[in-house]
Length: 134
Image (tube, rainbow, N blue to C red):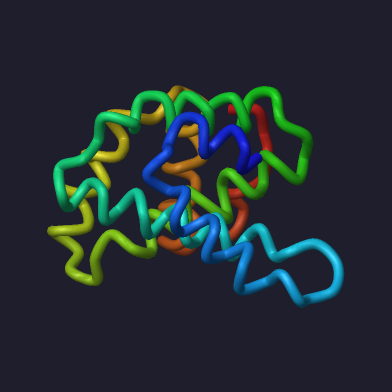
């Protein structure tokens, strides 16, 4: 997943290299969900700075993950990245809602569907994250 991220979002490379360095001495695969959390924070900070030139390509990649990825990739795109973005938007409801809409403008249809399912889940719909195809 991450080689493709670095192609479309070169500004994330510094954070990616820090992540790899932090986990280089650990056994097994690094925890890629942690890196997705780093990417989520990076994207929120980029939005805050008005640096969204990479967003169309980034979210086209996220859409590809949702449509063509295996089960792990689809889940990581939703729970690792989209939920990470939502969690980092703001603790102020009104500000988070406005910023959420700014991200929604970049999401493809499948990514937007999962974005909204995440909000339904956090509003108490325990069945919202089921993959019901619609």
